Length: 77
Image (cartoon, rainbow, N blue to C red; front, side, top):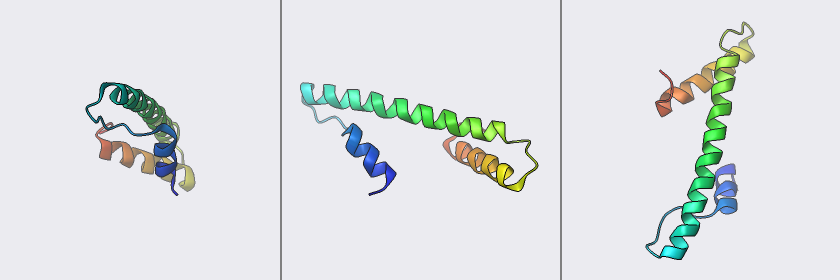
């Protein structure tokens, strides 16, 4: 089981099914997963900006990787 599967199992389904009570639960799950995603992206953005000017290869590599990820998401240009 990978991290994605663990998080999905912990949070639960997010797709609506057309039944009000179940969709209310799934909407709460969606809010939880978006809050988690927002925190993770903020952490990745911090790594990118904090080590952008680093001269050590390993630190610069982390910053570059984080920046490329943010570019793929369209968050950073």
